[in-house]
Image 1 (cartoon, one colour):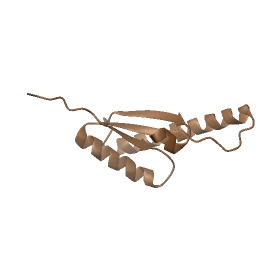
Image 2 (image 1 turned 90 degrees about the vertical axis):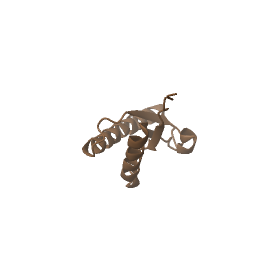
Image 3 (image 1 turned 60 degrees about the horizontal axis):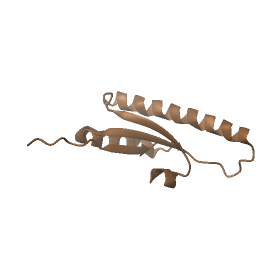
Image 4 (image 1 turned 60 degrees about the vertical axis):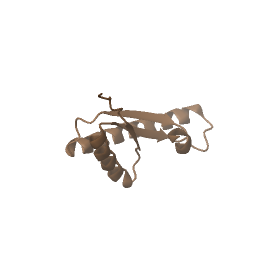
Length: 102
């Protein structure tokens, strides 16, 4: 009897911290051994004082552009390390990190 192995998603919260690169390669190695998928997650945290809707919209646009740039950087690092065929998904969420991760 042959059973189909379920693919696992490995989530990586992407930010501009120095630790994210180590976490990226750890996740990539884990996925390469378990035939999973990498979920790149960027969370836009709300600012404390948002009195004007226009300011909020500008912040969202800036954070979305930053997320996309970080995703491109992560993909480039994966490709340079030989993980170009790795299946991945890029997700941008709004809210507190602790609420969005759970």
